Length: 308
Image (cartoon, rainbow, N blue to C red; front, side, top):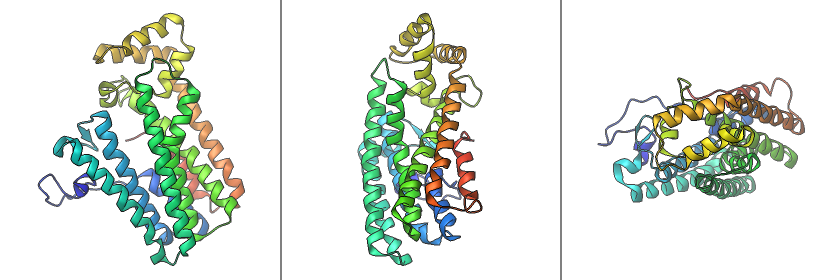
């Protein structure tokens, strides 16, 4: 099940000739390591651990939101059932922790290895709290923008912040630098999440027809902005749509119209840009040269790009 979810084999256990794209979160660890040392080797166990933990969250999120497909193939829970999917997710989490411990094989001192595992454990606890908040929001009519920012800081920012910190721990730095990289990663993770919220809400054609919107009532930033700033009649219409048990295509089209009238997409994209700017400003405490920041600047741009 783990190999299947990672795209290595098919449902029958046959090897898959599949290109697995590098994810944003583990790339942060490699980019920070490269910025500090001019190479990525030291941080490879940390990045691999982050990737395994990221997939743990994906498997469990598929169960929680009843997504039948994940990464263009049937979800683990859809093939093997929710109970086995929970086992698979737990297994990925355990693999992630033990993989981070392999930093010791890269001559990382035991103290920093332990600190790295502790950082991951704290991040996992935070992202689980964020996931709780996101699920709780689905049952609420009103969610404030500030509550949403708190949620994505936990759900998305905790893992990206941890990843950036792990990249620094792999090569060693002063405590203030660890804190700066964690803050950078947390803010970039929030920007990354908002960018994907926009992509999920509008869809590839800009019409709101996405599987995410059809299957759940996720309270994303564009929707929250419209609920906070639209005229009373539009707010009431949105509330009436979201009180339905199942959303229809006509509902999704109307939601997009209301959000467009409120300039909610522009607002969300501007917020993502603001968070990215703050993330890069936080690096001033890390003492990096402009040349060393090049790779991190590229990641900041990645956070603002929607999925292909």
